[in-house]
Image (cartoon, rainbow over all chains, first blue to last red; front, top):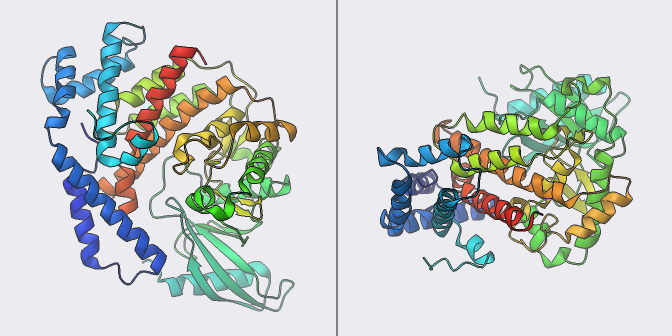
Amino acid sequence: MRDLPSGPQLESLARELEGKGIDGLPPKERAAAAAMIERCRTIARREAAAGEAALAPIRAALASLYSGDPSGHLAQLAAEIRSSALDAPGERRDRALALLRALTLQKLRESNRRFLTAHGYDPEAR
Amino acid sequence: MALTEEGMFAALGKFMTQATGARRAVVRDWSRLGGGAVQECWWFDLEIFGGPREGFPQLVLRADAPTALIASRSRAEEFALQRAAFRAGVRVAEPLYCCEDSDVIGRAFFVMRWVPGAADGALLVNSKEWEERRPALVADLARQLARIHAIPVGSDLSFLGAALADPAAARIARYRDWLDRFDDPHPVAELALRWLDRERPPPEAAVLGHGDFRTGNFLARASRVAAILDWEFADWGDPHEDIGWFCSKSWRFGRYDREAGGLGARETFYRAYEAEGGRTIDPRRVHYWEVAASLRWLLLALQQRDRFLKGGERSLDLALTGRRPAECEFEILRLIDAHTRTGA
């Protein structure tokens, strides 16, 4: 449900590139690489802290719309949107949009809090 | 076998000897230029002995990157587009020589004149040094875009094919194709595609669009544009498409309040574009193309992500780009909601 690479993948990449050493890079590139390594770790840390609990309300909202294997619910939503079944205003469309907003906000809480703050959201608020 | 940097520039010297009609040409110094997640750019110093171009020009090599993005043009096509722009009076680095033979330096490339200037989007948007110059820069960018949209498309650009009858329909088909290449579901991208299809504006005469006209893709010097860069996505399009991309939140480098590329007011840009002889800008069409811009960046970010996840490129930049689609999703939901509420 989250965007990829996952937190553990980002952490692993950060460790790998740090292990190879960034000290030999020119100063500007070294600073940029160090900032990106830190960013990978920050996202990984936030994702681990939020865990599955942060996604539970979104999974529940999806489960109220779709049946079957929960891991396929997001794909079912994508397919329903594509089929134009959610074009018309109505309660089902509102519920779908609400859960997409909630998912997007949760992803941003983990990946880009500055973006949320700039748009008037408190990254700590649920 | 891939050439070393030294081998590549030695081979380039031989190529330049022939291309310039010199007795001998030698690359004296070089360095990789920043940016260029898609293509590689190198600045180099050439010493030319004999022939009509004897001297010490500073040049730029633009070569294929290891992995191309979908819809990115070949270096030969990009060379032709840049040449057409140069001839039409758009400020670009003068393209000089093109080589499609990948045996010369290991991949296709072209050589252009080096132009000094600042390209770093974050610097142009955020530094105090540029504060007073930004309004003039925004207006100059608009004038350059109006000139781009007036470039005559001759036989040298025949690879573009016929002008698109319905640019919006063509983009929807393209983005649908891109989306279908990913294994994972993206409901907000689906939502954007449905909305773009339902709200498709009546077709307007297509123009040659730059395709990646944004902060970070031009060189600026002393309040004006020194050169428009990166022509690899140029294509027929609705003129509002480039404007929507330029104003898209993705390219404001954190200054979301400055709607024209993070540099200034949207109105400044619109006025200068129209005054240069560009068409009258329809804000509703720009809104439409801003939704398309967010969808496009979302899909490009997923392509970049897959270069890391599937292509084996162990790049921090590519990996972190994989976590950026949420920004585009936020913007798509916001723009669609604004349209629903206001009809704007």
